Length: 267
Image 1: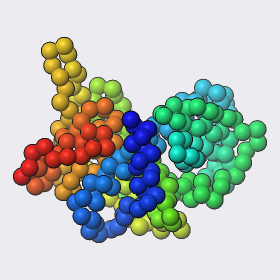
Image 2: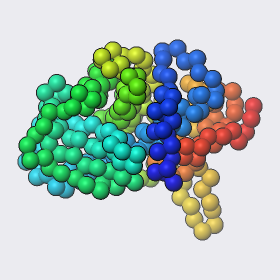
Image 3: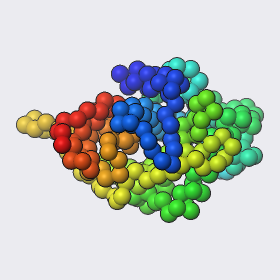
């Protein structure tokens, strides 16, 4: 089901890329559609980074990982994301390892016989990650844990901005950190189009566990910065495998179940 959702989201992005602007004038319906699309893609790209990193650590000797600069992730067909790992900064990067991820699992990996320069598109993605990190430092963006941000870089569509998400890493299976999440949109020429925080504070939520006598309804959070749930709530729902109930400033309560977002308690 998730694979189908990812494909549907990618198709929607290609047909009508979501608009990211400093002044958000989107309708409520468009906000919800964008939250669904982007949330699915964040989860898919984050999962691809996770499993491909595990593959990298398994097959590349540790002494050959010195100087690793990062990775970029791109869709290569309707089913597959490719993670390309490189050494050096974006300007001088040389790819040395690639892994193809399908259905959340690595289906092929390769240590390149000779390091290769990044493609122009890959260089834009790698540079966008660097720019977003500098913007985060300049604006005082910080994760809610001592570990550095997890970064998710979504490629440009039809010449639009590259979208970089800076996410608080999760450090425990018993809780979920809702906070310390940011977005930076970067034009292909390196200009920052817009940036924002998704949270006003850090909230460490204990994940409820179902028992034979109880059923888990989901997580409940207050969200003060938007009139509707965002892609971060969609990403969280996929991450914890539970619905996330979101109370917005107008007192409505929304249920976010994967990519599906609906009002369960009106004003």
